[in-house]
Length: 123
Length: 108
Image (cartoon, rainbow over all chains, first blue to last red; front, side):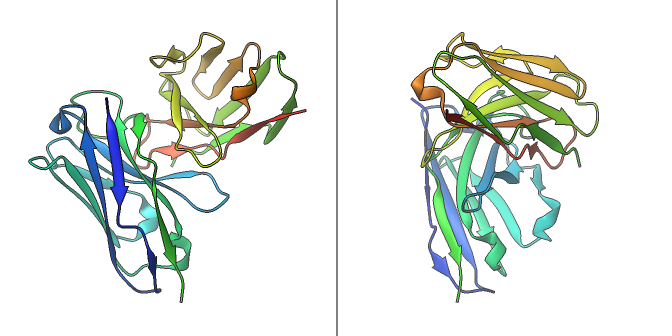
């Protein structure tokens, strides 16, 4: 059974930093690209960042202005999102999502999702 | 960036009725479109990929169609558990991978 468990969300002040983690199990982790997708309170879904199965290729939403960095540790079945210079508009539930298609070098469709971790940016 | 526009924003229907949800892309995305269902307090669930392929375990009452810029999700006979928000998402023009703003299917 595929499981994705996010952690690391908390209340942080504007300008602060935070690292989110996602622990994956139930599938061959290195075979799949992974993404972070966020959802602001009462709003829709927004893709944030994705990383290939090997970790070599990464992609980001342009609106992030290079404040976020995605990475993965295939030896630990973990994916991370380092978030710097956080702003109020980054307040959201952050979901970790596994790709549908095996072997892709970039995200495609989001087959499995974690339950999300809430990041609140406020003073 | 490919913008996905969903309509209507809210669909008010009764159980047993059929639901038709629309997703329009700002540019040709061939058939590289997915549909997701999200219930309150839950993560989204993949329903349909590549415009018309049901994901594993998804009931046959869910069907998708379309290509190019016009797509439709049809729920043939609404069950009580189908009342939720539905999102479309494209994977053809990237980055970014974009979602529509959602259609809420509510009980009339």
